[in-house]
Amino acid sequence: MKNLMNSILQINSKKFSEILLYIVISLFIIVPRVEILGLPFSVHITDLLLPVILIPIIRNKWYKIEYSLFVFGILLLLVVLSVILNNTYNYIPNFYPGYEFAKYACYFIFFKNTVPACRKLQNVWDAVFCFLVIFNFFHYFNLFDFNTTVMSWYHGTNNKNLIYFDTNSYGISISKRIIGVLQDPNYNAILFLFFVVMYVPYKELKKKNMLFCFFAFIGFILCQSRTAFIAFIVFWIVYCCLTSGFWKRKIIISLFLAMSFAFLSVDGDLSYLAPGWINTHHILSNKNDMEAEQEVINEINVFESNSWTYRLEMWNFFVRENQNVWTVMLGHSPNKHFIYSHQMYPHSQYVSIFYKYGLLGLFVLLFGLGLPFIQACRKIKTDEKSFRTGSFLGVIGICCITNCPLNFPVITLLVIYTLAQFYSTSPYLSFQRHVS
Image (cartoon, rainbow, N blue to C red; front, side):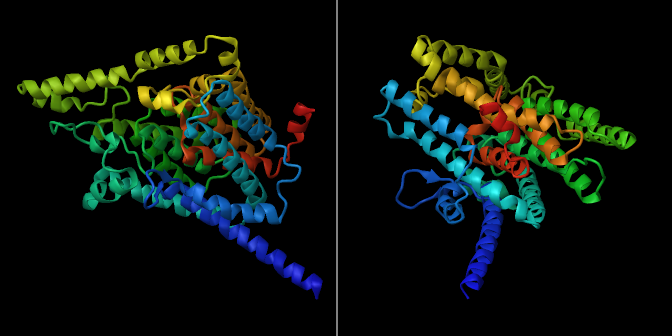
């Protein structure tokens, strides 16, 4: 009788973990930050789900012999040390990254132990992707006043990417960059690239995957992120050269995607190659309107100030701030009060980590992403999961040069999920050799 009860509890535990995994994957992408009545801040859905995922982790003792905690533990220790040494512990938000690292460690353990047993997981990802396609379609064409109703609920009414989505303050049309469920088109592009990597054919062609890959590519293009576009080019070259099979079909697929991009560049007035994100047709049509012309000039100047020149200035500032041995090694701590008060943004994940946690923090980040990337690349020709893991980590690594994608919970959870899925069947064999 006791054995029967234990078996029933075990079955229920597995079923509970499986259902919880489906809920987590569905909600952490499609649900925005949650506003809690009476509080001056919002929380991400992953914060609300954290106590729930701790139930199977503690119940099944998944935290035992978990080597991945080595990386998360060092990051947590770096946060505490940098805050204490820089005397910034009086500002409570500076400790929040430590909580985030602990949270992501829990999600890694949860994903790693639940993903292998879930047979319908791909169906959930398909459903989430279909939701994103429909959501961004309504957003791009503003059907049924979608941007005023639904999008304002997702991002608030003060989001500049939403306010100036298709026209500037003078009503002149500008090139649209979809922001989707995220707050920024650059990060929305990474989200679509995740699905490009997921659905691109590996050793066999499936009609559904081909169709979904095409829609993911279109969504990614309409985000108009230059860094993400470079990441895609690198990924596609690697995909064509290193994966085996159907060379002729790869050429056809590549030509089809290139033609789709060319069509969107003309018909959709994309700004990938334009000097800014202004629709130049309307500059000519409004050339007699001096006030509108000045607005166009100002917007072009704003665009240029956010390009490489502006980024280099920011990188130079944040790097030069680390002027002594302690700050070079351990950084300035998150120092959120300084960043918020001066409204300065590093525009690079690597520069941001170096400023906050110094060379030690940068090394841990590169180790945490670089080691699985190298391990995956070793099997990229023979193992589909390794190919997709290495590809997405490569995309993230390139995007981190000019953006801070790991500051967004959705992108970070996608990375955590990718790593957990990879290590669910490759249990740190190479990792143990590296740390021993």
